[in-house]
Length: 179
Image 1: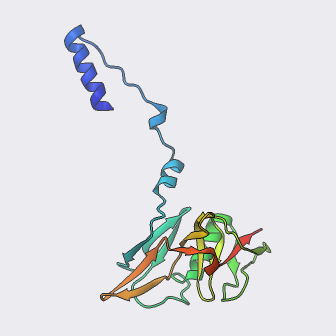
Image 2: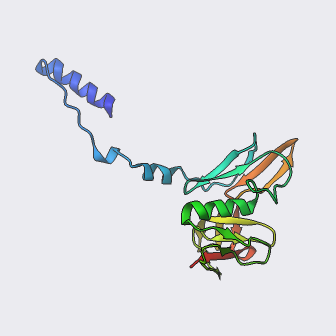
Image 3: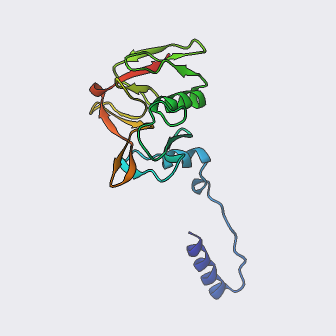
C-alpha cells in the first residue's frame, strides 16, 4: 500500500511539479489487540518437542498450557492436567475449581455448580477417567472437540513430546459446564 502511494506521489511530482504527499490512515487497516489475539489461536493438531521447563505449548484465552521434559506430571501443582483446568477457570471465570478426580464432578470453592452436559461448548471442562482438559473448539456436526491441555506427553526418540489441539469425539469424553 505504501509503495503504491509513493509511486503515485512520484508520478504526480513528475507530471505536475512539486506535490506534497498526504498520508491517509485507513480504519480497515487498524486492528484491535482482541482481533489479533483471536486470529493467533490455532486449532491445528500437532506434536511438539518439549524443550525445557515451563515450555508453553499452546495458549487459549490468555492462559498458557505448560510442559516440562520427563515422565508424567500427574500430581504436579504446576504441570498436571488438573492444574491447567484450575488455572484456566481461575483466570478466565474467576472461580477456584477442585475435585478433579476420575469419575468426579468438578466443584468450586465459591459454591458455583458444574453440570454434566452431552453437547459441549467452548470453555467447558472435558474429562476421561484419568485426564482433564478444556474444550477449545466444538464441531457439532461431526461431534468432535479440540482440546487445550497439559500433561499429554510421552517419550519419543529420546525427547519428551506433547500433542496440541488434540481432536476427540464427544463420545470419548465427559463434559462439565459451569452454570
